[in-house]
Structures are given as structure tokens and as C-alpha cells.
Image 1 (cartoon, rainbow, N blue to C red):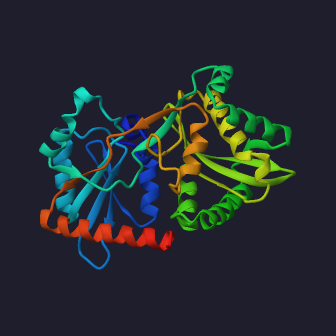
Image 2: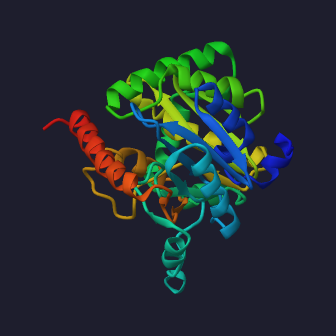
Length: 323
């Protein structure tokens, strides 16, 4: 049996890490690890069928497709969704779509954004600052002048504040987010393993911003952040990102992965435009991945699933952003 250490040597993203699988088990999800793929198995409510999900692995090989087929059979899956950590190819390589279809995949609805910002932190601090937008550099200075203090704080008190601010931020922004139990189980599993750390910003002695960072491989990831509505004028988040970038350098990382973004030239009315523009200010490379593909094991049921899936998302959008 492969060890967690051996598994993580070939995993290229925290969501493929052994510890991520252990965390997901604690949330009640079945986790299958086979042939270099970590797949979570999810119930379809009120049915005997399941859906598999394999995010951020590599481009599936023929052998791994056979593994997906076996997993789908063993766990009664209608489909297994894969979202490889593979950047969108050049025009000369566009036959990858045809290759994926030949392996039994069809284009699916994305769960994880196909766009991202990735910053090369191997440059000097001066070079990194110079590559930022002028407004971003200015906001970093504003936070410093206002006495915002940013530190790693993995204490129980800081994590409780993170949960509190996450709930506040979710309600304020009106987006879908995981609840307290999910974040607690994540922290209890990934922090002792040395993957998750908490970066907090204090202003006048009060925690006003909290970010969870994942250190995995040669990359520092920024997956979750929360802040209070109060004291927005001190620009704490801008300083937190800059301190996270410097922390990545101290910890020997090559990259800062900002977890997600919108497409190039996004719709200015998109509800995520604020997050996108914030991250864009740091001079990172805008990345497009190949996106989401569904390995279809039960074709007839899959067609029904997609109709229901689209209807569900239409309802969620309508309830989140009522007319």
C-alpha cells in the first residue's frame, strides 16, 4: 500500500494531496485513490447513483481512464468529472479536445474555475513590486502607514475569528460557501500536516482580515479569505497579499497560486469582478486551464443528470441574485 508521503510526491495540487482526501472523508465523502488519481464520490440525493470528482490531477492517460471506468462501476457513478491542472494548449495542440472525446469524455460544467492568477515569486521584492499595478502598490503603502500588522497566527482564537469573518463575508457578498463544519474539518486535518496556515491582519489590536494559505510542493496557495466590513479604508487585504507573497519566498516556494480568476476582459458586472481585479493588481500571470470534462459511464442517465444540473444552477443563480 502506498504511503501518504509517497502519494504526495506525485500530487501536483492540494486537492490531490493525501491529507485533502482524509479531510473529505471527515465530511462524509467516500475517497478513492487509485493509479495516481484521488476521486471523491458524491451521492445524488434520493437516487442510488453517484457522481465522482477528480480535480487538479494531470491529463488522464489511457490507463487512468480504465481506472476511472473501474471506479465508476464499483461505486455506481453516472459520471466522473475531471478538471486537470493542465493549461490550455496552443492552437497547434487543439486536438486535445478530440483526444479527450476519444477517451470517453465530454465537456462538462465547471466546478472549479478554469482561470487563475499564478505569480512567480522567485523574483526580487523590488521586481515584484514594480510589476504590480500602481494602485495596488499605493494600497499596500496605505495599509502600512495605517499600522496594519500582518502575521501568521495559527492559534485557536485566530481560527475562531476566521470562522466568524467567513460567515460575515459570505452573507455580505451573497455567494455560495462552505459552512463552519467544513472549514473546521479542513483546518483540523491540513494544519497539523503543515499544509494549512492562517495569515491574519490586525488593526488597532483587532483582527480584521484572515486568510487560509496552503503550502504544497513548490507553491503557496490562497484558497480562502475573509474580512470584516469595518475599517475597509486601511486596505488590509492588499497588505495581506503582499505579506503572503513574501512568505512564499521565505518558505522556499516558486509560485503563489491565487486559486481562481475570471476570464480575460471579464464582464464588469460579474459578481466576482472585485476578487478578480484585486488579484490582477499583483502582476501575476493569467492562466487558463483546459477546463472540465465528464467521463460518462451511464450515457442515458447522464443526459437526465445534465438537464437537472442546469435547472439546479438556474435556480441557484435566481435565488442568489433575484430580479
